[in-house]
Image (tube, rainbow, N blue to C red):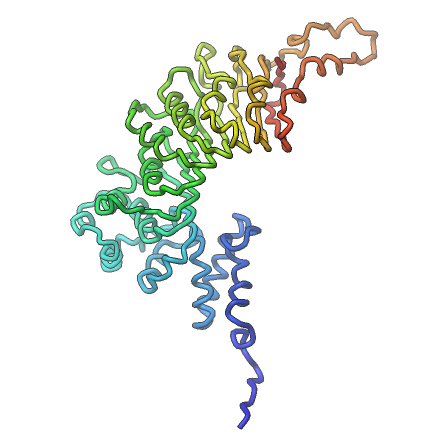
Length: 424
């Protein structure tokens, strides 16, 4: 007897699961590169809504929802779903922390749930009873521990996450004590540490060192600092541990670091770190101003800064970006810009992004006329005529000679309006 076809078949009966999954994956920023940051929250709501339709769609949408987790998802929802479906931890590819944390329903307030999750991680019960860590810090550590198979991690660290009696990621430290010979993040390739809202910042802060120690196969490291707020540190052991973790890094980006001052601990740390990163293909450095520092403070010139890089990177480096942000009010810059000979030693360079201090010797602003930098006097010209200064600029500018022939893209980072630079 022939079966009568359903006159109103559902989409799950018409389309194979693979095709449904492909359609739904367009709402996932991990699966679809076209998803913008502003759309992630809305797309997460769509995926959550799909999990409430039917069992079949839920099983597909939930796995895709957990590919990329971030602030658009409440932490309580995240932990309760993982408590019910622990296998979903294997589907998490990227974490953006902290998750949003409703104060009225945080994970610590649900002692039964917290205990079950702690048991899954074999966490010492004494720690759960005595911890002084903040709610956000506990949830960040718990999320990282449960999803240790992630490929990408972006983490924003705030000063108010920590009390005077504890340290960041105390839960993670406790777990590592029982896993001394085990790789905690064996698949982690991309790490972004954001400390832009912290009152102090150091390259060798304990948080990035801990995460680097846990991720032996890391390829990309991004450090974001708060600018001119250096922490007072002088720990050589911290520098050594950091250096040991970056030898295989291919992409290193440092943003929001204060002025690179001659002789400072921060500068020495940076020099040793760059010297240890021998396999770099991409290096990006963005300083944040030097306006607070008086003219007698000696800054590392661009040519010397470039010498910090490991000699092996002259063959491997493909993308270089240097923005020292030195235009603001500094007129006594050291006259050691990067030379054409120096930059052309990087034989694989494809993309170059530089600010004027990288190849210019003087700066001026605040009413300093352009004639200050050149030997000609434009004033004795016939009234109403425009002086022809094009030959002067051609003589004083050597960007064409400066560029290596391998460079395909050049981005010139200009300063504030009114800043004038003279090239070497």
